[in-house]
Image (tube, rainbow, N blue to C red; front, top):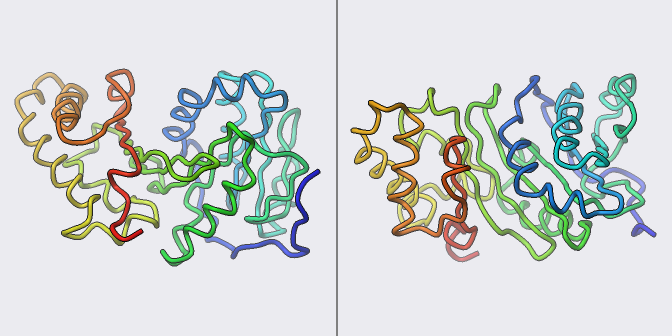
Length: 265
């Protein structure tokens, strides 16, 4: 039995900007990091929360998750009724669309909630309450992934949260377009973007990442990927990086939330 939900959706309408393949980096990480949990679930439900003006991201999420968990199904949830109506023709086996918001109008606890570019327009002070609400709806081994990316998905930063709260922060980029790792600062999720100032952990992390990137410049002759791998390897001496070279090769690095969490929070 699902908890009682409000009669009106909770949240505000986003700009709805979306593009095909925009969330590929996040989706591939989810499939790798959370695929086993999706396979174990009796009914692996994934929510694409706030998918926007077009349903592309939900359609793509289903395809990518089914490579890892063939029985996964996706529910796209949007607060704007016209967007839900426009998405309905794209429904298929394993893919449905519903009108709703942060209350999540579902009859089951989802194994995954993906909220990409949703909280960007909210105030920083509102983030913790949204996280708590969404984490409270997760299945016991569920995952909430909340973050921000650019319009075509070249740069992306997201926070992964379990029912207990935030766990990790992942930075992901198309390495060929990267000048310095701190270029990713403009894509920090709302919980961190205003904390990229001296004295805050995320600022120190990006500063150290830039220094490691500069020190790894000789590896650039072997390609941006090798330079990134070397820079991340150097970071592990001072920061709790939780993934390994297999993910680094994808232009990713994941750090524990506690290392980057805003001071005083």
